[in-house]
Image 1 (cartoon, rainbow, N blue to C red):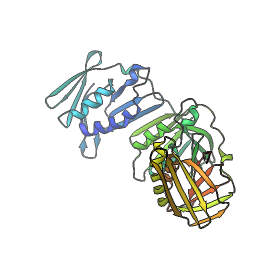
Image 2 (cartoon, rainbow, N blue to C red; image 1 turned 90 degrees about the vertical axis):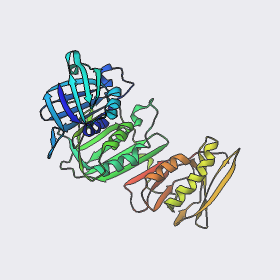
Image 3 (tube, one colour; image 1 turned 45 degrees about the horizontal axis):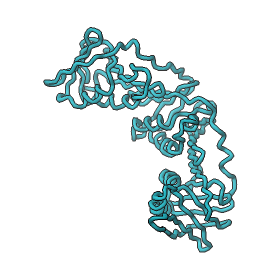
Image 4 (cartoon, rainbow, N blue to C red; image 1 turned 30 degrees about the vertical axis):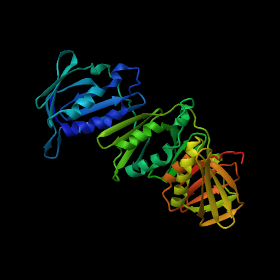
Length: 380
């Protein structure tokens, strides 16, 4: 293999695929990036078995010649060194030449680097996915849905299924759910789904979705999502992003959302978030994160927290409305702040079915996004 490629295009392609490189892999060849050079362009591939990413750079883009191919071929190069050395090369033109036993020479300006490559035939093949089950989503909507749900997944690997976001597709409705037993985040949207296909229990790692989100373009371009029995493929322009579907059955969370409330209130989002943020500073010092909310008849709530060493903070917030029984609630301030950050609304509706029942939050003007956190039982 021998070619010359423009540095900026190579760095961009490396940046995409390197998100799939893991230092924890037990398969040595997966610590490398596979390079395939053909007449049409250069394809980079990286995988950690959970995620596989492939990025294609065409030989030409309009009038710009990106790649000058002298000899087609393939090689696997150690990712960590390859990524760092390419960024530091002095010239915009980079020559890559693979010799006997996959010894690779990289030249740029006055620099010449020798790297011991690996046999590309030993690199695992990417999954073959039949494109019979496919949905299409705008890129910015997918990014938003990931942001609004993936933060609530569990980080505890002892229950792997809860480290993922549940996708359910029913007709033209797509719903994401993230839950870690202490909190839940849910977002539902209407999609253009030509068929009446129902796809249930598709669970994708929250970490994987956050890596995908970094690749997704901000502009409103459409992303094809192909779903098979154990893999999901995201097609993003010149990038193919494969993700494994987590094994297991996601718990039924539908019963956690009540149909009616004992107490309901509408609160200005910004004021509530800022008050809880200040209270969090004190609660954090005691390593409890516990903040208390007390409802009053004068349409206000009191937000407070205390630290045995530092003191106490108390704030009053005027409500837009409140009805039902006045309650005293204690909750994890960090969980509440995480939920408030993704509720993109000036006012939020908060519903309670009792002092020790789940707290349900959603934007005042819509019910397609729901945030739930469990309260704490405290002695006072």
